[in-house]
Image (cartoon, rainbow, N blue to C red; front, side, top):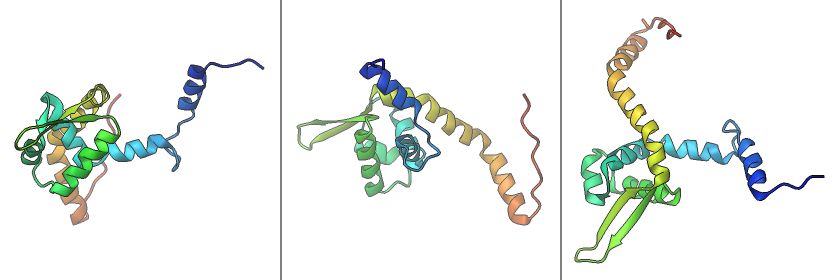
Length: 141
């Protein structure tokens, strides 16, 4: 039996991830990054570090509890860092890590898509609610 290096074993394990399985860690990550607050926080941090209060002002409608939970979860997942600067009052800055920056193009694209297509979605919702929804043409090749 041939021996495998640790790197080969890790590569094999990564290949075995299947997000369609309920127990797959990748599915847990998909659940995290599909949260609306996560998307908004990551996009808000795209231009650089921000303080908690800045994030709270930028992201309309988020409660302090949800923002705090979201920031903690993203820090735990390695997508952002929290830097505390001792001062009066204490200064806390949040910044995307390299891992968070690597996810940013995907999240920015989703945000942009939503902003560009909201009118079509609203029309479809109205049609559906009236019972007049029609089949949309399939996208071209």
